[in-house]
Image (cartoon, rainbow, N blue to C red; front, side, top):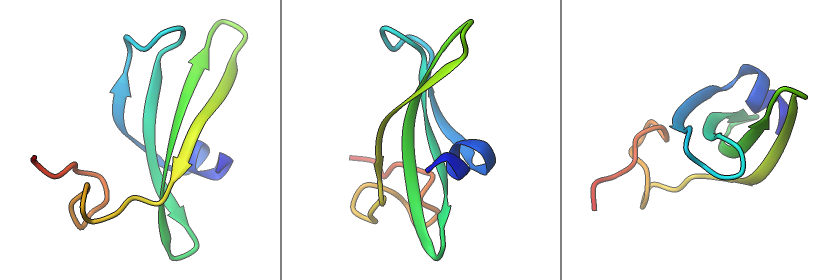
Length: 70
């Protein structure tokens, strides 16, 4: 999961999350897409991984970056 945070792409930003701003990161784990939601505590800095999951086509477009419209 850490390689997703280091090398992946932030596809959604949640600057107003409490208690720390967070974001949704996208990357690949082998041949599988992976989403990681993480929050950053500053000025320490400390990263909190909130969740990680494999996105599905029910909720995301084929690029796994774009949410489907409801």
